[in-house]
Length: 464
Ligand SMILES: Cc1cc2nc3c(=O)[nH]c(=O)nc-3n(C[C@H](O)[C@H](O)[C@H](O)COP(=O)(O)OP(=O)(O)OC[C@H]3O[C@@H](n4cnc5c(N)ncnc54)[C@H](O)[C@@H]3O)c2cc1C
Image (cartoon, rainbow, N blue to C red; front, side, top):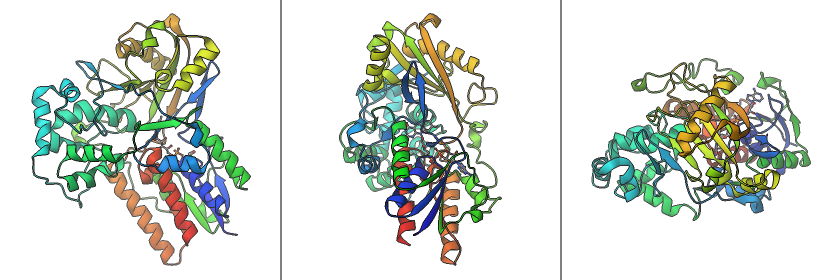
């Protein structure tokens, strides 16, 4: 029987392990921490369990849905409240335009886009429809550079940055377009226009909401995978950080950790030598992680979901410290029901995230105390909802910090990832060990990229 060691028990390692185990491989999975799931984890407030990290998956391809079906979880898939989210800008709060991808409008002249950009900048954005295409397939540009060139910097600042900052924890001028959305750049070149590419991608995407989740939260995917892996005979070693791949008794190894760990594990300590720094034009410090504050409040004023499913905050809206707010109980009906069953009506769960890639030292974020984060969340909440929420209405809260799972997806990191994969493949072809890599650092952030990439990685091992 083939023996494969999988290092890292996040969703990438678990997915690859499951793919191999169900095809008859004897799999040993090693996880450094005391639990599986990595950036997918549960947290409980007043006995209602919700997601502490990733809470949904993008539906732009059927990849995650297929995986959930293969796991028997199809019946658990839920769609969010179609109300959609809002944008908080320095001068206004407005619903997010309905025709966009990553904030890039498919119809730059639409009323909801005009409401955010103003007539002059909306006119600049529509130039994309006529301007000759000067970008080429060989380039590996950042999302912000492409959008600023085609539609103007106001589109980056007011529509794209709130999303890349709030969702990807990345500066748009440092986020590889291929990492943010693998199809967008190729489609733009084929269509000769960014707006037409957005429209084409939206038309090609499955009907329905742009994201989905599972009843009970994405964390139920981890408990399901763990149970199935154990049934398939996989040995799971928790609290076991792997330092030496050579010491493992295996025919093949999958490293499902981030890039610097991989370099250490394969004996390439110098490359990539330094964490990539965000674009110099911002002159800011590197993101060190995010802190999420989840609040349980009893607030009838929130029953009308004043900001839809939540709010993405433009980095320029500096009267607000949070970079995003999810109104969890407005977004997911199962959460609202669980709260009502446990506590009665008018209870709400809200999650505010802090820590931008562009933060300067001393900004509120990953390194701040729980007290400082809670206080900022309570200060931001009225500004974010347009309503008064007082300290007496706060019933419970948690603070969770994340340093992994959001690798940034810079253009530099993308080429480092490619180089590591090529080197490992060349080594194996030359008679070296079979070592493959998976995970967000290599595939791009988000379950829609991590899961199919991990499955492909496992398939490559199976086919050799
Ligand atoms: C707060 C937050 C919210 C997010 N929200 C979403 C969302 O809503 N939708 C979405 O699609 N994506 C979201 N993401 C991104 C998504 O969660 C990640 O892209 C994905 O979960 C990464 O999975 P991974 O397996 O690559 O890495 P990780 O989850 O980081 O797992 C890596 C694992 O490897 C282990 N490990 C590392 N080194 C070793 C070693 N030497 N030996 C053994 N084990 C080791 C770590 O302990 C960890 O458990 C979010 C991320 C965060 C942090």
